[in-house]
Image 1: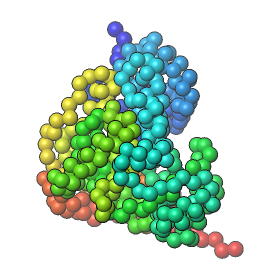
Image 2: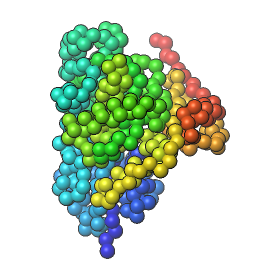
Image 3: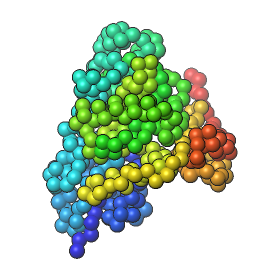
Image 4: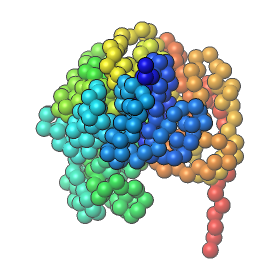
Length: 409
């Protein structure tokens, strides 16, 4: 009898991808990672994980590879932790008659301009927005909306290319950055200029049509949006939770979603919850770990169960507060050393300490998630206690960065 396999298409988000690999193995599935990156395939091979290199943008090549694998394995399901590949996953699932997301819904959701239009038409509260293709469009849109504005690519994830522009100089600078060859465009440049919605940010964690809870998010200083801390569940009143759940379900209906995982970013403004972005996928690491520590719900495992046609279970098994603190350097340069993480990991209540970089690594801040060099996760019975544990752990970790030499002509 052929072994049951889960095919996992991967882009760059291998941290979340590894959670899927591990969850598949616990479900007695054989995970097979398909990636366009040879270095990732080499890394996975050293970990004893079957990995195949294929152009993940070539649907025909992916179909042929899946057909080849079917001669050896019983393909139980196909999925991905990567948003840019999730529509392709939906197309493959339809081709092979497997459970999966609606590819048309995923594609329109990943286009932030199309997403905004559909949400606004459905009466969902979103920031004022305009589409821009060049510097003139950007300038006109900002004038109509009024500074400050957010300027960002119309397609993308992880806050890459996203910036708060508080005056004309910052707007011109970031426009030049996006259009001047620094940002990688998958197609012709399309940018969103949108109103800056002021207020605390939350992310609704959703599976199917069930809002499991909301994560509170805290950022570093503007103009960038580099996460500093997440806490789950967010401290919300019953009314606030209900309003976030209501607007989240309205988003799902407006965008034709509701199969599998979704995470929705909102800001609580003077007019209540305003939807910043709907992401048709499971939130990346470490959100799944926070939900599991707080509620005992393994979102990755439950998603895989749905993918392979099994019954999932979203019942809350415990009630704690989990939080993560991201460590972000304050300068560019060469990381000389980083220390104290082992002592931090040994503290009671600390669930994980993870370093993203090693000594002698070049640190070049980009103003997005790639600026973080480590994280610490803790959990306890309440937010204040969890925050105290995090602070004790973070205080134990230190590092040294030697700035790059300055050359004077």
